[in-house]
Length: 81
Image 1 (tube, rainbow, N blue to C red):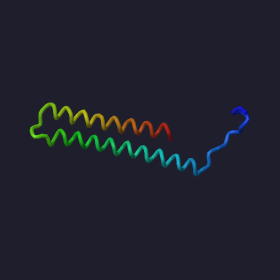
Image 2 (cartoon, one colour; image 1 turned 120 degrees about the horizontal axis):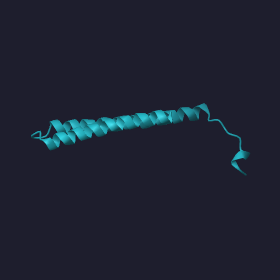
Image 3 (cartoon, rainbow, N blue to C red; image 1 turned 60 degrees about the horizontal axis):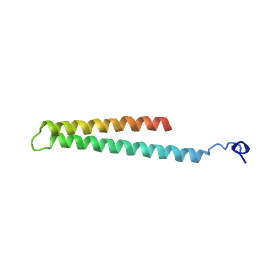
Image 4 (cartoon, helix red, strand yellow; image 1 turned 90 degrees about the vertical axis):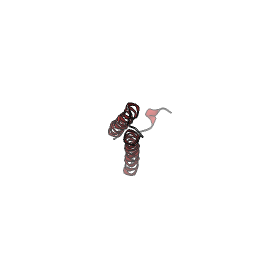
């Protein structure tokens, strides 16, 4: 039997809803993780004993990585949707 022997089966509404909710959960996980990374970056930059260039650079890098996570998560969510 080949694939052409089987007619295409349309996904049921419950399957589509389940897939959509899974996509939303994944998107929210990306947002939550990115926000945590950004908060860590702010904490590293501001709560260091003495704000030096290295702690400021680490903070900026973590905030940038968090922002990139938000962009990537949003792009992935829209692609899957």
